[in-house]
Image (cartoon, rainbow, N blue to C red; front, side, top):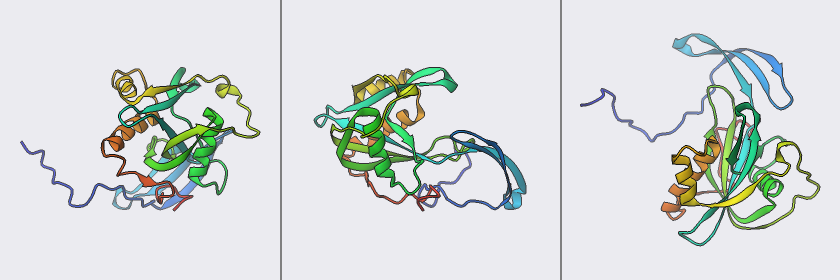
Length: 219
């Protein structure tokens, strides 16, 4: 039985089209992020007020090693206080250095969190991590041909001090996700995207400097 909805006549593509903001108020200035309250004009939908976290954006990295068919991904475990969980993640960090190239930021985070760098970089997937609540744009990179590297002058502290790390096979990572043992949304998206890309022999990967029109700082 038909649902009554027509098939899309165009490719499935988000439309980046910010609507008119008629007022904007800084509700809370935080140490990392701010909370905004904005009045938005939606045409026939009228005006609505939306509160959200203003976010700088971020990058994440799937570091991959191993022969074809036996690939392993690097995971780190970090305490996340809002959910009270030591969750398994892929290396990630904020785009909080103005003008920093996203791939360079990803390489920096990989060195800082995992003492690794890579010779081969591609864009894996782009995400809005929670578009109803925060403005975060996140780009996940796939890093292959990894090798040891040191982040000069960087000292781990806070939640990053003594973080467990480990390599996990791609099938084992997928099994952990599907069994409900891994919850981090970025890691889940990254692992599943890696498996899809692998099945296509990596042909769908974008270059590391691919355009990023969804992020206002990189349009």
